[in-house]
Image (tube, rainbow, N blue to C red; front, side):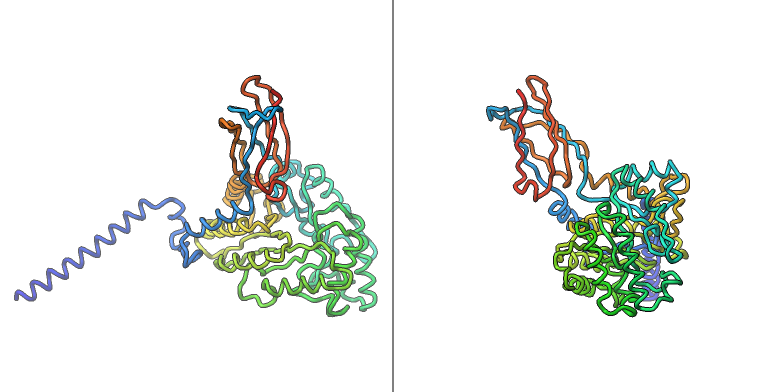
Amino acid sequence: MNTLFIIFLLLLCFFFLLKSEDITRAQEDNYATEEEKEVKGFDENTLFSPYTKQEWRSYQHKKINEGRKTRLKIMITYPNKTAVTGAKLYIKQLTSDFHWGCGMTHRILNNSAYKKWFASKFTAADFHNELKWYYTEPTQGQENYTDPDAMLKFADEHGIIVRGHTVLWDDVKYQQKWVRKLSPEKLLQAANKRVDSVVTRYKGRLVGWDVMNENLHHNFFEKRLGKNASAYFYNRVHNIDPDTTLYMNEFNTTEHVNDEWAPPEKYLRRLKKIQAYPGNSGMKMGIGLECHYGAEPIDLHYVRNSLTLLSQAGLPIWLTELDVKIDPTLENKAQLQVIYLEEILRESFCHAAVKAIVIWTGASIDGCDVMCMTNEKLENTPVGDLIDRLMEEWKTGNIEVVSDSKGISRVSVFNGRYEVTVVDPVTDVSSSVTFKVDKVSIPDGNVHLQVLG
């Protein structure tokens, strides 16, 4: 009897223990943030394992400080070299070495509000379709550059740099019907005419050319013109526009670990093959990564390793069409999209070789079906809020500092162009100077400024 009573007590204790755990979990849920409630069931540890999120962030901050920022020691003196104690310095960032970009379509041409929104945010653009061969010459012999001409004019007027996307495309799906019907001899003539036409028209006006789009996954021109077709067209573009950087532009190089066609190793091998083609050795080249992340959870380790490997080529990297597609059946799809996008952006930014990120696309009036920064009224979506926040985080705000007793002020700033105004503490006379800040322009971080006295 005593034994049964003891067993009963033990079971009773176990029951209350389980109920206590349930109550504790319920209390923890009540104290969870709104974001955590909205993405219930999401385990962020899967993104960073075996590291914690804090460890992942610490590494990113370290790389940003090393590659994106410069520590300045600013020495303020009078013309007689006497140190100025108490001089006020007003530091303003004029431009950034890093570009935020966005996809652009012809819809922007007749929408003044959209133009204002675009120009207020972005310093770079990628035309969606308007520079592609099928857009400018849908019918053989009938070229029309009206839309790209007007879009480039708008960009020039607002200091927005534009990528030439794309001279040719290696995917058979995107060849005009008349192009597909050409014999190899006629195809070469038509492709040469296309190259000469578009590159000559915009020579010296673009920040780069995507010469042969997606030619790791596709081979339309190689199958018809020979294995060196892409390298040949790079050479032809280079000879017309030798000062503009020429890019390979490819998808799934950072997005999918299981894509056998375009991993970083194959990307770099193809790039070197293009560079090795006769006449291409001195060609300026860059790495273009489309970054269309799919519906499945991202592999941040693969993103990091891919960008690290590609950075070793010593070439500028542009993320040219970045978006994040989320499985529409997921209950928390909107919140997950923002979470995954933030991690991709943060990881990409911490690699100094990444010179620009082009969001694909901006406003919903541009027909974005995967990811939009705004609705049709140009009001921010959660994606837009995130990007605005990171834009603010990754620039140097206006800084006011005062020189110490030795006339020295120390600041850490993002690389770019700056205006520094110095105010004499005695006369209140000010003088301003502009200069470039990076580890090449100011390798030791020392800046010497004089006040008029």
